Image 1 (cartoon, helix red, strand yellow):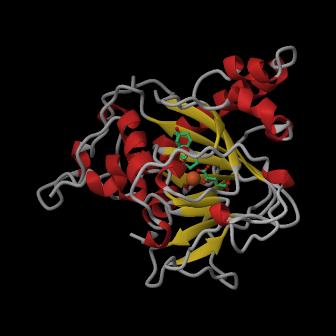
Image 2 (cartoon, protein in one colour):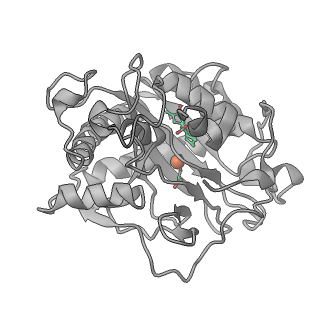
Length: 349
Ligand SMILES: C=C1C[C@]23C[C@@]1(O)CC[C@H]2[C@@]12CCC[C@@](C)(C(=O)O1)[C@H]2[C@@H]3C(=O)O
Ligand SMILES: O=C(O)CCC(=O)C(=O)O
Ligand SMILES: [Fe+2]
């Protein structure tokens, strides 16, 4: 695993970051990260993450291979209407363009998943990231009506519609991934053997304001996502990098997005479920001097009260279960507290 000890701290930090980054002229110390012991970036790299069309006849093998190597790939032919994605970005930009005091009316409260603020993982660090986010684990109506008392329905309708579309797509992709390991519906005890896989659905929006000195700040620190899979809409502005870790020399690769594609990331809970066969991808987001950047990850995980451990079919005499079972909420808590060490804490001897 890649070490990030250059900026690691050991206590939980509560950041009181109510600053409006779009008006900040200088990157102060609290935003300056020392990323000295991370693998180098490689802007001249010709490698790129796999691009897979969902209508490809060899889809199962191609997805299976991508999950076992990169742990991340782009999908085309996904069928999500372009108009819906445009409306999602428009509403997201509308929210983040509001004055900070108005956004703070939807601030994430201690113990809640949903709300506006810095990414939860920040509690592990002393420094602050050059970004803000809005998490919607359930209907955003209660939060959005605090922000726009007379005008929140359009925002909520778009978020709900997009979330519904994402849930169906996530379920389809998960089945394709699991089929590559010859796992069938009956092997997942928690889900009814219906078409759509049961699970938790969390929509999150990220905003990376323009940054006066991108070499000193980071939009989103290197991390793996925690849930089963993430479907990321990265928008047309560059910034996402993934770690190519399956070759001899690990290095960062900038994601060159195929227009119209969505990015699929394997998360830690899917790594656990597959007993380590699928790799959860380490990724980060850089910031930009010229323009702000929007992105929208959709996190798909197990139903709230389901314990997730390695599937029996994927354990054998040679390779017993590598991890103990865990519920999603517990794992999200471990991630906030222990960052990339969370997975190690579940490892069985
Ligand atoms: C379901 C979730 C995944 C996430 C924590 C959250 O409750 C909602 C925000 C998600 C996010 C987005 C930015 C990176 C990340 C590590 C973080 O701090 O918040 C992920 C979380 C995760 O995957 O653990
Ligand atoms: O903004 C991006 O491209 C990545 C965001 C991300 O990794 C996340 O929200 O988990
Ligand atoms: Fe992520």
